[in-house]
Length: 67
Image (cartoon, rainbow, N blue to C red; front, top):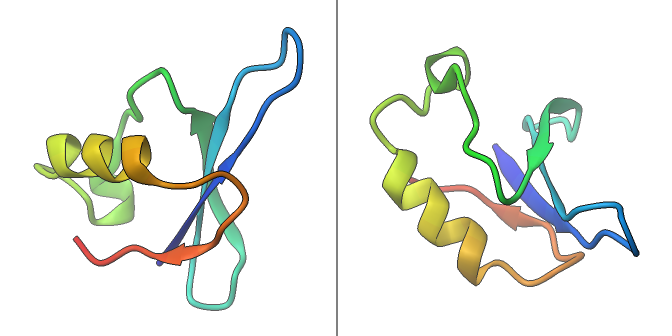
């Protein structure tokens, strides 16, 4: 799974994209709001770790998500 942080402009907030191994978009959510239903993506119980990754993630860089 891969993660990308997309910078918003003006009134559009920052967003996070989660993509699978084929880079197909599987989740798209606001960076300032927690993602719900993490079990759907195999990330249940990893909310705090995911939050830390999102905070440290640079904008516009795709990164492999290994948590």
